Image: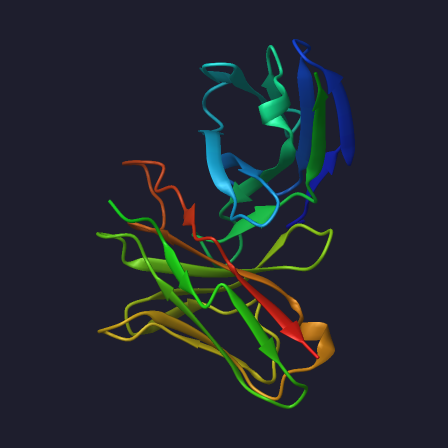
Length: 114
Length: 118
């Protein structure tokens, strides 16, 4: 029940295209859903986050869509650029005995071809 | 405004030695979290600490691993008698508090310590 399932494992997109990464969860106690971007050899960097009372949040080229009834959320990267090539992790916070703990998806390796 | 600092960035230990990983949270942050990332895998929660308190250690292996966040100084993740399976990247994150209605209380990650056990 604590799992967050992320797909696809890897994604190849042409420059200018839309990248879509999906995540699903089971625990309805989760109350905050961030996305992190990680480059090789670096720590995860917070990209964008959403709470379940909002269905969509947009920041620049990045949009989170949230479907509370389906317990799914997704990251859309518009006008994808080669510099967006990285590993993306969805996460969910809360639930269980620890309010602060983040549960991460397995990650999606995004490659944007020029 | 310095971010989360971790040291060392790379650590090599032989089997049976001790590894000490340090984390200094962002200024104004009083909550620290440790996560482990095995090669080609996602991040797994290990432990959540506040100053002088362990809040949640549900992700810590039962033996050889311990963590502390003293009143003064950085948080320390200690691994005793390391084995090859401990080789991983260990990330520390900090937040101003654990959550609640007032804000997102985002967790910000450090650059990690890459532990290699020979």
